[in-house]
Length: 422
Image (cartoon, rainbow, N blue to C red; front, top):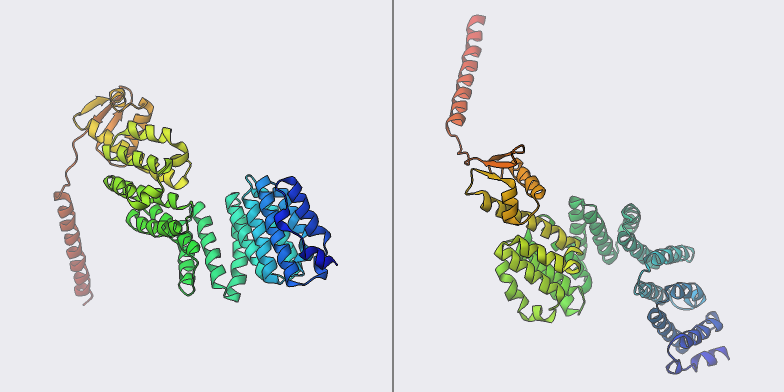
């Protein structure tokens, strides 16, 4: 009788909103899933779970999704483990769609890992542990993430699950990159690529690998290589209609700006791919390219102030634009002080429209870095600029002559010792 009731339940008649949620929850929890293994009944219940999950996401009820995982455990015992794993991971993914639910996701993952260990569901446990590692990264719990990755990695290596290995190595590379351990980040990414070369890799995962490769190349100042990786990732994300494609496009434009090829930016943006993702982020990068091409500090600062969400909120873009700003500032200062042998720092600050203290600090840094020859007279508030020193060729040659003479004397001394000994 219970199987008949379940099979005849009309999901299309379920209303929207809270009433529909309660109706679906009642349908799923009042029927004893463990007593029925009928294929139609199980399929109906799977559809009901999908519909209830979507409704709870729409209501923003992350706690309801968490409770649903606990309440459906009898049903998970009635279906194949692979099917149960798919449903569990789907519900966890649905929780992530609710804003500000990261802490709850961590709690849910820990609970589901404990349940998977009890039920001896190793496949599901490993995937949830990988998800937990990603959440630790998001919450900046880096040591916890690395500890979890280390344990998981040693276990999965024995199983030789190549696809899962790729995911784990890629996550480890991301964590090490955030910790600024670029050598280990590159090593983990190389291991991920080696594992990926032996299997078929889904397009989305390949795009993530290319994205990480581009980020690490950019960190190493190899912007031409980074551009090629970002381009590959952009095409893959674009083929999947993924929103991350616009971020890859911005990174491509950033690479062009950083290698002083800002003139190429309008051509990329006006192309078919660029027009598809035209928006505030791309417009902001166009403005940065224009300011860089004009070598205008005021325009550069105005762009950063006008587009904080598109530029400064992105750590990768913000870091490289900070370096670009410093480079532009140095170039402008060198150009301004070039006609002078002695100039007031306040005058230079007025010409470049920056605070005097900021200009003084930058000039002292440039002198220490030997960007030009000079000294700061802080008592008078002036900068003294000296002519660039020419390389002296006399002293190096003299040192070579002295060294050769020293070798000759040492040789003669050794010979004299031999003669005395005889």
